[in-house]
View (cartoon, rainbow, N blue to C red):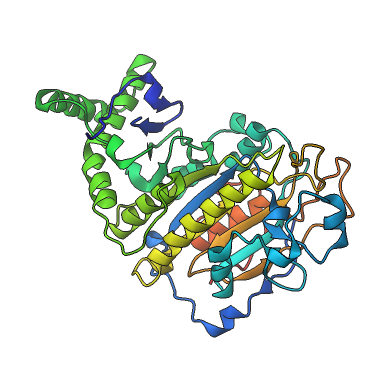
Length: 417
């Protein structure tokens, strides 16, 4: 039986995101040799470009994702919480991928993966919520500073396009990065949940009310809340058939994993293929908060990530939209350089950020943080400010003015063709 959309106060997030239904100056890049052997296809224009933003929630341990096996300090810091050298998937003479990232390594070999090392921000915060607020808003103040960075992009660069579907989150944990006080964001846990629940008479009544509220020019207090509800109802009514058609009827020969990440990425692939209209698709994957017995939970999550994203990128390959899709993978922080007494790692600072896709110039960017020269909290020291990566996406991918989104001007990286 198909689940139905039920509207109540719990279905809405404050500030315009409707939950419907139940990724310091950088050092020079180290380009990947595979780029010389392949022609990087050009995206048609900025209006067709899509960002798929994946969050590894909980703070993924970058040192056991990309393992610096040639550094003696790694083995001293992690005598038990380490990845054996003989199992690693080699990247160069210093580091290798966790063995569960075979599909990710294939992207590296093909020159379709850029790894930015040592990403963070000054005076790092070790609270999950506050650190993600900083990443989500690109400001140290977090939520008090206003909308999320994607929301600000929506408010400025796409302000003349009223469509709610420009920003889409698939999943239940809607990040604040997509929050906009001016525009709606489409968010759903599953395609089946994003649809109308009323009969024909109720449908007509709600649509008429929604249209009337949506056309009103000014509202205060309860009227403003009703207007936003009306706009949400109107958007759900208009978009639910398209969500179902683009996702449930999507035809692919690729077998996606059946876990949450796999299903979410299949939905995104269907919407991209159907020209749904999204410019940013957001997905959350986690929890990577591995304080104790780290090996099993991180391994399971990395394997899920590798299989899900591997299927998505393979599915995308050869399709007309492939040159227009950029994948960015971030986490709110890395883990402590040394293991703890519980065979896990505690909240840390600098970590890697990943860019996947046909438009990417593969290779390493940024310098690997020293495992010896740690900060006062025994954490890795960042050398690339994460806002440089946002500036790169804003300016080089979307053609937007990053100063309208970020708190200052940040150096961009040459990771895109």
